Length: 170
Image (cartoon, rainbow, N blue to C red; front, side, top):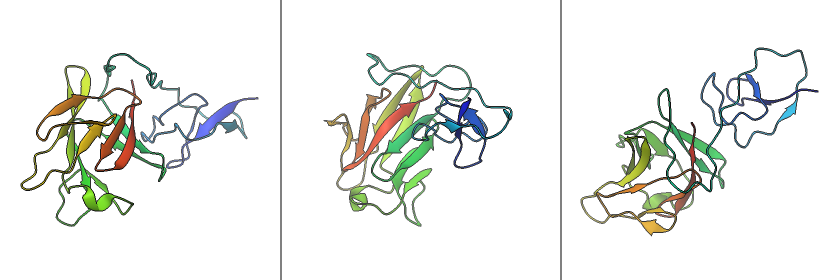
């Protein structure tokens, strides 16, 4: 019997060990593998995710680097590319990833942090705000406003209490 992960966005069958759908980039980490119902239909090969216990930030090799922010409480998973800004959803926000209504969102800035990919490593940059800067934390360590901190696969990234798990795809 063959097992697959079916992409919830596009419906493509992926290898049972796949972490992302190569057809549309959807994160499959929380999708359970199920028995395939028909003959194999050009299954998409698995893409590994680095171990959460890595000692150093893992470089992303080949293609465009991507990073996912997974929120276990809401089930959301946001794909990010280098230089993208994460912030609160608002008509005036220019953030590439805008977070909608959820507990604690009122403390997230419209442009809260930027994800940077430099020399093979991912970093989070806490954006400087005009007035008060609500915290950006990596594993409960505060990133100073205007400063950067390295990210590793499995790290916890908190934007004023809204928490995400960092997922890196190689």
